Length: 109
Image (cartoon, rainbow, N blue to C red; front, top):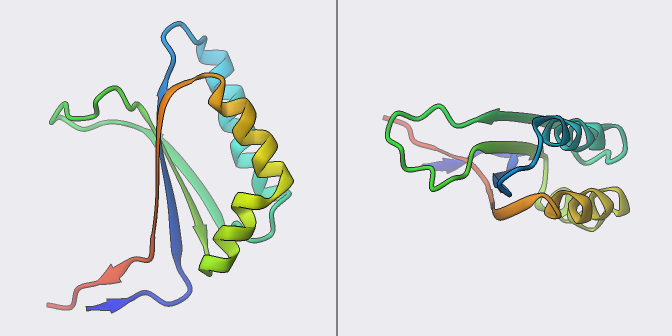
């Protein structure tokens, strides 16, 4: 197995507070995506909602993925004032959040 070079994934699972209007969630998603315009270390941003048929989501409905080239880039993103400001606002509408960072590993069969 070999780690993918130049790729670091930052995964966020979000469970929103009950009663948060969809328009407010959408505004925060756009604000999250807009960080690409302010933080050079972000190489891509993707998001989606849970579509699993296993019903194991535990209320986490939205998934966000940010890609970086290095762990240092990820660390710079976490400390960046634009991310800090976004995170402070985002947390106000969340009931729970899970954040996981990893370097992908390829399995050659």
